[in-house]
Length: 303
Image (cartoon, rainbow, N blue to C red; front, top):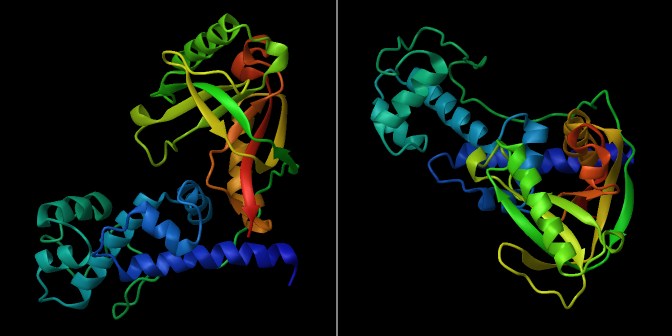
């Protein structure tokens, strides 16, 4: 077996272990941190790995499996109470289970003829519970060259933007405020590096709660002031892909390749640090979002 196939299998095996765990613990709360520990991945990035491999967010998958398990239990026993099934599948109320069931299958569980097929129903045999396993990952058609670089420990000044995915103007305004602060401290743009770091995934976190940090490398003696905060970022190994004058549409495909294709076939897993954009040209000089000159980088550790 080729090495990259072995590495891919490690990711698939870990995710399948989580799928099995979810299927046997549907009446538990199943928090992200717990499932990341089951997989052996950092909880900082596990939801991205899960979505890349499974094709659904963790919350979407758990919700769907609970509904489908409920349908299987109702079909297998004509006399079982819907309220009992709701509890067995992890719902805290019959009303919540009924709403979710109807939203997914198009009919309320109390109105469903259990001998008839449901909309969106998987192909189960009637005496089986549904099973969920990933068998293999098919490569994406578009590939990007990945290289490695070491990022030294450094002090970063940053401004955090809330509700960052819904209003790009908020991101641009924060960018200019950070630069004005930096220059007011006597800093020279020739002596710094600009980073962009997303702290949340909009597929997991409500968009109005998503956070994005603009960061500038600063001398070790600098302190924060007002809305500008300071963090000491540790040294790490980065897996990196270069962008040379392309726009946000390419960046989206690039990150999809990172999570869905390259990472499971590599010898690496994400470190417990945020993914980042390292700008080789400042956006206000390059034309903002249509012409990005930056490195998309993911802190990684060996598997």
